[in-house]
Amino acid sequence: MPSDLSERSGAVAGVVLAAGSSTRMGRNKLFFELDGQTLLRRVVRRALRAGLDPIVVVVGHEAERARAELADLPCTPVDNPDHALGINRSLRTGISHVPERARAAVVMLADMPFVTSDMVAGLVARYRESTSPLVISAYGDVNAPPMLYDRALFSELRQMSGEGCGRQVVRRHRHEAVALSWPEAALQDIDVPEDYERVSAELRVADAGIGAAPDDAAPEVGDSGNRVAADNAAPGVSGAGSGTGAKDAGTATG
Image 1 (spheres, rainbow, N blue to C red):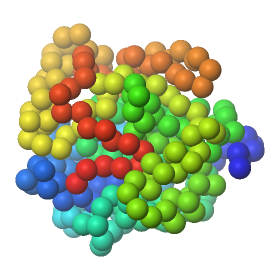
Image 2: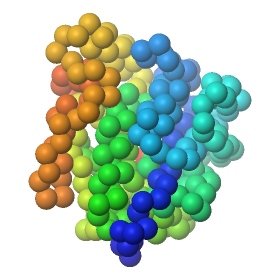
Image 3: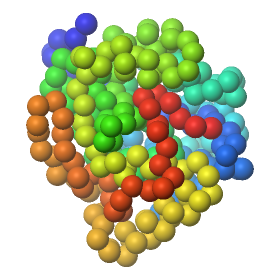
């Protein structure tokens, strides 16, 4: 299954999953602001800075509002009319809209604010120098987005059924995967109001320059077999947050 290295210099797409209804938040968290921009714009801009091309954004709940928010950015919103049925439908929708010219795709979530463009670019760089069909992010013992899938895995992602189709593919191909290790605190997500308040406070501390790296600062990466230590990859993170969710591969909360 591994691709020839000569094929890996082409485009790597981004698939941003942004269709959920944010039921636990009470209103659409995609339009909450951090650092003066909405979570939705923030994740798409980080995908752009990481060099992903093209970028497919799966929208559903308040789709027209999401499209308007992204109108000036070079990305392609696609509708998932079945978004209420779970994240698997969004993943399959996004992968199905990745054009043929892309050799692989990085799946990203809008509600993981400490995932940086350098982390995403690191996945792509490792993909290009390996023959693995899968490059995964590891936060301690948890595997979670962003995840990079080679085109050879797209058909499996589209055909999987049941809970966690992305997670199923990761488990099936874990022996072939390359893993990059990020600080566990970068796994923090925003699902309930308390999460948003906590993350906003941490970013205010970062903006004040108190023990924090600049936004998207280049991580200090040290190679160790198939794992990479990048302790500075998540700016503004000083420790694991109490609201951290187990965002396993290809999954998210609504």
